[in-house]
Image (cartoon, rainbow, N blue to C red; front, side, top):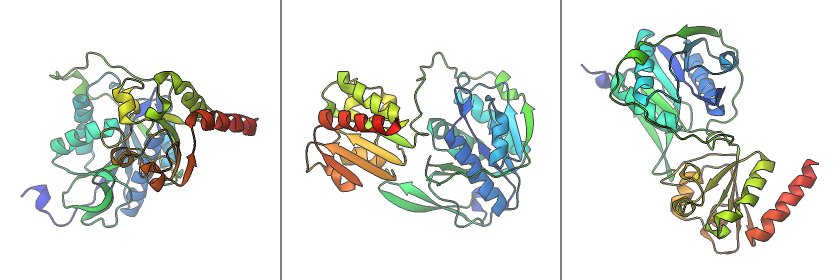
Length: 331
């Protein structure tokens, strides 16, 4: 009988798969470990953590990792998603893991389906809360491009939970046993039909998935040459930068900054929208932001209906004044 027909889930161990950015662990990684530790404690289980190198693996101990499986011969920037998924599946089977946690980042969106297929596991994506039921795993998730919420239930023996970044709340440090085990994965030496020929990576910027504050702009800026003030504002606030779909389509900004229904979905503490009308496709990617500030010349712009704060005014007047005030405040 296949796993999916069982009505009650046998509880084994819990595992979190995390990633790093330029060798440093991302905020989403700590969030995933903290989430996994919460579940492990509820189930009276150990928390395993799979990581792929990084400059300070010992950081994971501070968020509750009991056994940290550090795969040292796989590089997230060079190896394919298939290789990464195979390596994770080997360890999941070896340690009899029943619950796997990942962040719903670009990597998570790529790896989670591969793992689900390989392990014959249930896959619950866009989770925004802890499970409300563990016997028949039930979790609240985003649905319909973040326009609704749904309670998803899985009756698989193994399950993968992909959590929305910045959705779980405060990440608390909680000491784990913290045993670090270095591993050389056999998947790395297997021949794969898919190899990475080249990869273009942004550097020196805050990842949108990790950013607590995001400054975003649209066609109201009129030209790519006017983006300097957006980047200056973001720099002062320690924020990430984003844009609307038309802006990325016109080549004013890279597609990696496009947020919305067909772009990234983000959940920052503060989202500042400058010169963006607020079409429903854009709102789908930012509606979960804790606070939204809208700057627009049109008082009837749809975005104002979703905003916590709104400023009716020309961005070329408002933003420089905002930058000036923030500089004075910092000094």
